[in-house]
Image (cartoon, one colour):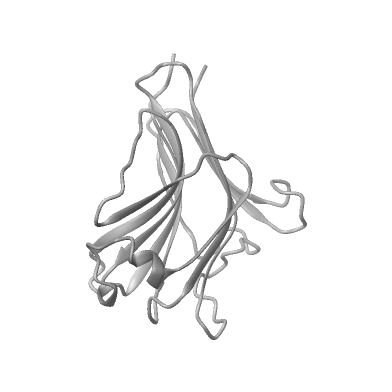
Length: 189
């Protein structure tokens, strides 16, 4: 049995108090415009596809898929006017693997916080994992473990989320990179 990771995303938004949308094409209605694809395809296959078939609604969603080893991800970096912006996403995270205990897989929605010089300050990781991968929260990373494989809505004010990250000075956060990642650490038996 081979291991596979899936990540499905309906929409990603960062909205100011004035209703200004900061993520370009966060609803994927314009295919993958404004998003960058990165793939480390050591083993297995990957695909990234926008379609209307992933959820019973007429809107587009994106699916990021990676089987076996390493990752496929979509990303977009957004300049922030302040940390008083609302993050919201609707996602279905699925991670599966074979029977070999040492292997693992995850599907994640990651917000990586950057300063004005593009140095990484920390991140928030919304993750569905299986196997021996156990990310932990610390002063620079907030891990939100997902146990459901159903569509879920995630929403928070970035300023409030940064309170979960005492190692990050909110005044230093100038940008956020949003990652949609499917990852596996190898083939399984």
